[in-house]
Length: 61
Figure 1 (cartoon, helix red, strand yellow):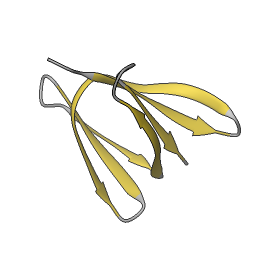
Figure 2 (cartoon, helix red, strand yellow):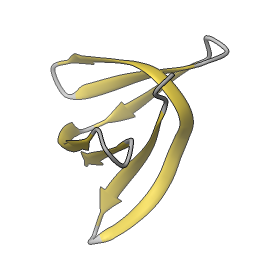
Figure 3 (tube, one colour):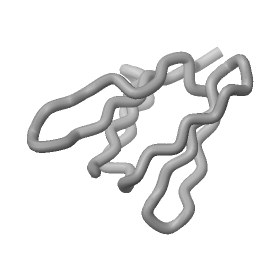
Figure 4 (cartoon, one colour):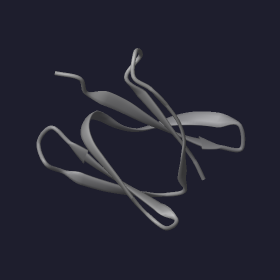
């Protein structure tokens, strides 16, 4: 099973937002992250990059 960690990039710094993310959806200016337990976290911004080898998603806000 591939689960990702999500980091928010703000002012050049990366901050961990959510771990064990199994689902990602976007809607305009927000990204909704769903973890393995079904908990949703909404982050304002857009996906900057996704690294499927390292299981890391970056969101620029």
